[in-house]
Image (cartoon, rainbow, N blue to C red; front, side, top):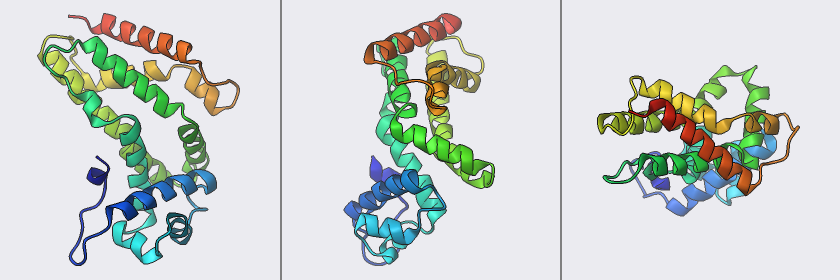
Amino acid sequence: MLNQLLPPNGPGRPKDPAKRVAILEAAQTLFLRNGYDGSSMDAIAAEAGVSKLTVYSHFTDKETLFSFAVQSKCQKQVPEMLFELADGVPIEGVLLNIGRSFHQLINSDESIELHRVLITRGAQDAKLSQMFFDAGPQRLMNEMEQLLSKANAAGLLKIAKPLNAADQFFCLIKGGCNFRLLIGCAAPQTDSEIDTHVRDAVELFIRAYRP
């Protein structure tokens, strides 16, 4: 799955997949620790244990590396397979799995710190914020839109505007807890609280779009 997130190899010697993974992991670590501006390609190369030339051979510039690092994080937490709608599988189960994974992703320590960095940095560089949105949230929205379109076509749900419904679903899962975590005035929810919240959100969503 991770290789799908990486730029295709150019001519010449084949690139080492293990080095690609190491570079992505190093980038995620440093972007969170030092912010975007504070993370140089030299520092990322040192963290990954590779040369700067190797970093540039896999990712042409820091913006590209940042984008792929965000995609990698989302793919790990909310893989594309969760959005598959297999025959005979209840839509409730599919939505519950997506909801739990999305909740874990957005409320993880790494995501909270990254969002704080982007809130601070976004006021100065809207391009960086757009890169993040396209690489992470937009990808999830697109996957969810496709899933809900299939559910509508199969008669499992009645949804005239799948993209709007996808946005509503993720907003329900985020709830108020995510904002409280962002501003540091609440502790993470317990496993029991998370399960109850996600189940309630899915139940409300299905009730709204039940045929």
